[in-house]
Length: 266
Ligand code: ZN
Image 1 (tube, rainbow, N blue to C red):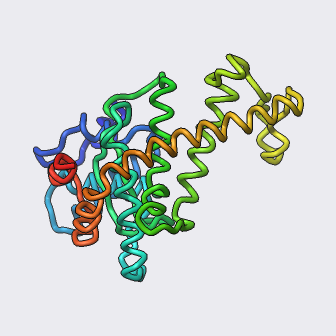
Image 2: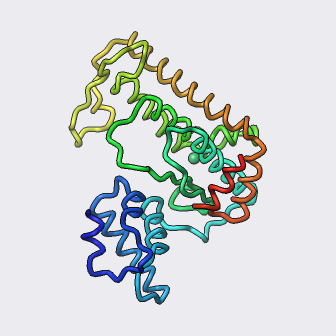
Image 3: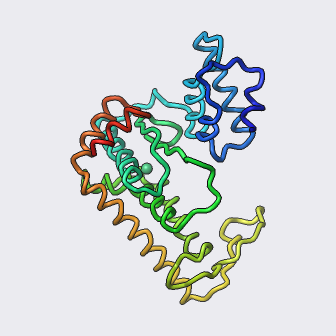
């Protein structure tokens, strides 16, 4: 609905599908949407178009999500290869796990701070997530690191953000969503809304050392089992991985039907 407000008065190409745009912009604030629509209009003007088509919207969504493309950044062939396998790893795990959002695009063009990215397209706005879905989401996040390890027998700093996000979800599953069999449905830790305090001070512990060490243990176990899920998938499809990563190195960005065709042969 908010999209409708922002595109009002803008000349739109007939290929523009607002429902698809809405699905591609989950979690966007009103300001993000406004920003995205403006950016698309600027792109269209720059290309001397008299209206805004889906292509400009797609490009501006990528900009808002991941920062501007940085074509000037020089990446060595070796790095490109590592990034290609890393992104293929994410995409491959997402492709094989039924309880994850479908992969929409993979790219090894650097954006913002990222050297590459894999975009998943949520099928619907979600308010509830099951334990299985969260577990699979973590496995997808770890897919990049797992691919690096399996292909190059070496790991890089490229997985830092993935690992951070995975750990955050795992910790919340254990301490907030009561998803640990060992600890049961308990809220562990007491979050205070005191924005002016440092982050460390915001979380008040309401449990003892013994529980603290069980939490660490459970988070560790959970991450471990998600890692194994990703590892199993990537090992099983090791040869498809070469084919997909090579295509990605060649074309730099793969999306839509082309992406589906690559993965269908897996
Ligand atoms: Zn990654």
